[in-house]
Length: 215
DNA sequence: AACGGAACCTGAAAGC
DNA sequence: TGCTTTCAGGTTCCGT
Image (cartoon, rainbow, N blue to C red; front, top):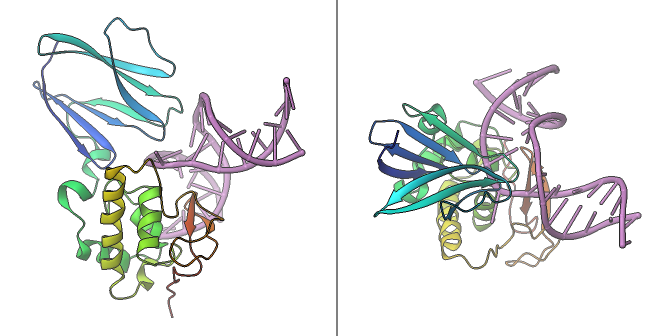
């Protein structure tokens, strides 16, 4: 029953644990999930959904999967699952390719923010990064992908890289516009607006994020 | 195929 | 104080 973990890797919001017998474990944290290390004999914490006991350098450790909202997923499989294989490039591991972004935008009339959050285009871009990147690029999140101007893909790519870098630096969860609707735009002072796209709140500045339109 | 909207869950915060 | 409503860092499903 005991197996040896051969590799742990991440792609976008998915984590993959590969065992020496080829079996795999996939984990997605959803909105509220987390993995927490604990003593093997520690009682389950609130909202604990699963646990894995491992031996590392001779010491037993328990890793607990906690997820109050239960949107996360934990999947055991013998091979890679479609949720994993369908993922686009990972921005950190593979970089953000301007041409790929540009092509994804060009072939879709969906709002640019929804395209950015499509995990097949880039893996791991969620509401925060998409919101921050479009603000940085001065692009209105409602703009149809196919209506973007030349140079927009590059600006959005740059915005994504910056937003990711900021998140990694972790300034105590401070964002330029995410969660700041009603506050002044840090760039031009206009009151930040909010609109729902694909069921997700999208904050943007009507003053400096220009809407691209077709025709 | 593509789009908007609801559904899936719980809990913290805001509103009354 | 306490009950109700709203909202949340994500994804999937369903009807049009």
